[in-house]
Image 1: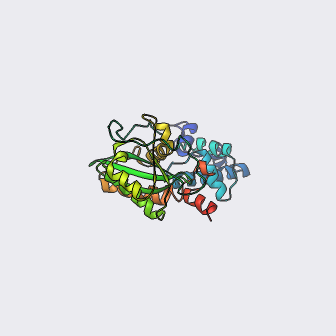
Image 2: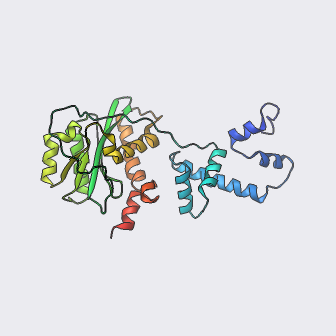
Length: 282
């Protein structure tokens, strides 16, 4: 900055290099940084560390909660100010697009959920959905099963084809991981995969309760949509994947080692889904 003062404004260089103008001028005058400047620099370092660790997925509320968990009780306004000062902006979302096809004549189920996304225990209500992600080889489809109690992804499957086998494989994983619970309300949209005979046989075999959204109402399955929105914003938007296998690895890592176990969930009081269950289930 000192070498380029004649070429560029100090304010612009400070913003781009994320340093304090007053700190720069103090340095030029040989003054030691003030206690306030030291505290602000330390704050900025801590905020940036959290922001970078979570790959620009966290805005000020989650950064604040993460710092609190680390023993640094900054308030949200202070953290937001630090993020603005450092030009740290969390990833932005995109508009939701429907994936599954509900224009069919297959049998559908009644809506047992009725937009009541609360659950008093694990394995009381599960929601399901399918999304797609682009690779240079073509689409990769992801089906998930979420437990509404903790918002944990308890089952998932991936395929280059959006067939009934995809949603059945995700459900089988959920059943295996949750030790074959019965009586679970299993809710989805009216996609043909969730109306297939193969899928319905699986529900009947394990004594699960079949539930579906009303036609064209994405709010009936809002929790699944919210998960996919988070996944797209925090993982795939702006990224290029040369192969489906490369994307498979990233999706696995996001679901199993980040979303379920690390990511702070606002609905759960800013703990991860796994931590929430550990705290609340004997």
